[in-house]
Image 1 (tube, rainbow, N blue to C red):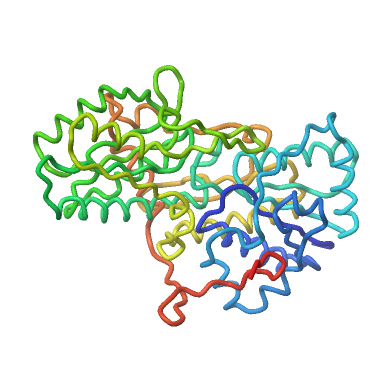
Image 2 (cartoon, rainbow, N blue to C red; image 1 turned 90 degrees about the vertical axis):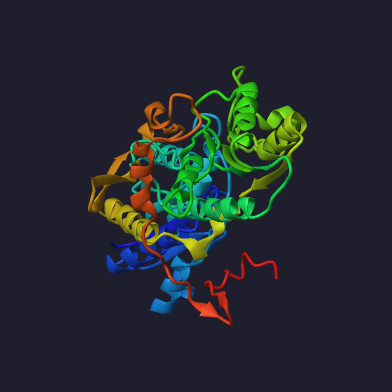
Length: 415
């Protein structure tokens, strides 16, 4: 590389997102980039000319290792939606003027569906104007819903955390006895895709029978059938644990969480904030059965639990970061790096690049035949798919008994 690289992070963070950042930085420097800039709060911050030189923050190998183990977006994130080119060319002119000022050869954006929309629009504008900067997307999302890639970095660590947490919740539930039993409902992220919720089945093993029911948004949720199923199970056992996706829908297309409360917050991309599904269902079951109920939202813990990260996930996140730089250096633009599974046993996975226009604003859902006919559990095919992604551990660097992270850039720190 003869000039500079700039990298940004966008959307919801993951336990592996900074490993991709480390991969971008190291590969760019190894390929001769003079400077590697980091956008603060993604393209939204770039528009305000907020950026840092990553060399000021990653000075040693220990810094790089700490970065891989640091949760949340080290550079800060955003949910900024670029306008269509014909709607506001001034925004694009401003971004490209900043890129020229920084002498940017490659623009790398680490994110999910909406972030790939940004790569698509910027690469299109570069073509229209004949600009030389190359734009490449680096996949990231715990939701695992990006098209054309076998899976996304961040998903494996979230799945590992969910499987582990479900196992602990199940054990907690059956250690106490209640006259009418207890029903615990665990709400898991994923919006319209059930990849994360299905990972609750990973808790099943010789020492744990796993959750009793798993509900994904790919199948219609019937409140009365759910109630009947829970009542049937309570006749056989005193502790029931149910995993539900935040995005489960009723037959009329409404989110279950909307049955209890209206969803007021909508982000720039039109996504509703989904929360309260477990709470609503716990109250409903308590009223139907009179038993004790408990609602648990794993919430941000699913994406920030770097202490429980999957080694496979961290290594692949680093790999795709490097592959994004390599692709840009070799002339690709308007592309996203994808992971291609080569085999399950032994597990092997490689990278290639795909046209971002076929990925942006699309959603990859769990195949219907990976959910049982009743819609209450995932199949062995699902478990075989996800299990290789959670293998191995990444030992935290412990200081005074607590994991150490790489210091937050002072430009982002509020302390």
